[in-house]
Figure 1 (cartoon, rainbow, N blue to C red):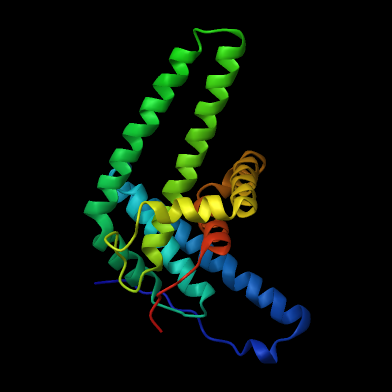
Figure 2 (tube, rainbow, N blue to C red):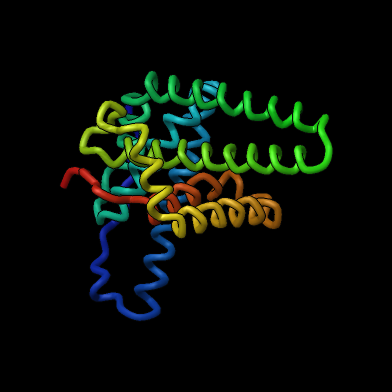
Length: 215
């Protein structure tokens, strides 16, 4: 039996000023905490390696719907997206992990060098590593934005365009990733409650475009 969560709709037009702001903040905090816990659960259900990327796409889907003013059944929607993209999502995640491993091996090889060669190639490799991680996250968002969550309509170039054509947003996103990382250091309890959902919120807020989400 599927467990569903729903939130009582409140007319925010009648809740102006401080009360409206507090309600909206509390509503978002509750949703982000729940979707983060769902990400942890479904990542674990997929034995970590086979669950994290499909769960990430489901996170992006829910946050995109919420920012579009919709209130879908949370667990049902998460499970539907997770199941729908599980195979193809894991294939992309596997290829991504292989590429990241190659970059890490490259960094270890570079560590044997010194001087200009070391600094140049280590810096460039780290930039490529960070850029690829951002690409993976935006690619998941692009798939989640489609009317029917799918990779078939998502070009591998589409996330690159969003990164290259909006360098300011890309920089803000990277800064947001570091902010979430440091917050986890200062507030250890944040990791299981908000880390992934906050990252998803930042990603959706900065890079959503051309959404085909259903009404």
